[in-house]
Image 1 (tube, rainbow, N blue to C red):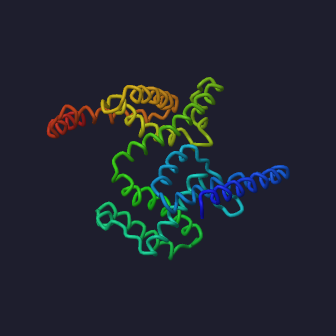
Image 2: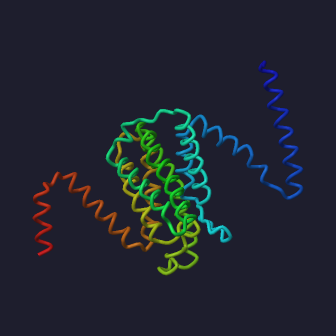
Image 3: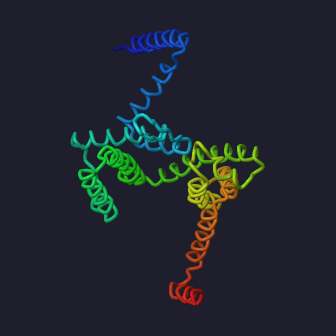
Length: 286
């Protein structure tokens, strides 16, 4: 096929698609607009699974938990369907002879996780409510396979760890801005702080916990001299957004976690010996 013929095909399909979209929109049917996005994501699943994992990372803070009362099924959209897709493609590749690094499977943490999954499978077979147990097992698989076994492969390239942190943080910062504006409408009331982050997080505990996990990374990026000045300033700006969200979350457990984390950091930085820490701990207990 010549280049000119390829162009004809591209333009022809594009015109037909636009025409069909116009007809569907006039009939109040908008789902056809998502077809190009679905095709792109499908191609990523086949040829670039690492980008799918990073896309899920970006979308996770924006995911909304929806429950279908008729089927008694709850799912977080759009993250969990995408993770289910990763699970299915991974299993198909394994069945098709795709080689997976056996060193990962032999790691003690991997073995512990596989024992846990095997035990969930056994208890599913003996469950009094099999449908609930099967759904639990499948949900556990679509979390563990993408973000443990495949993430290990993804993070072999160290630059992907920073991409992972930044992508999640960008989404989280947007959610914090939304939550803060929403919270301001209630005068930053502590009681309102328990639920203003909905629908993205169920309550202030989960919201505060996630912020507590990512605030230290942004603080580290600010002082990372391998970054350019503009990146470090961007880190500082996002750090302030997350810190504001953490403060307004009114999650005391999250506040204490960050404080303890900083304490541990300074202990490591100052290279304080364990025997001294043990001595201080015993004195405090007494």
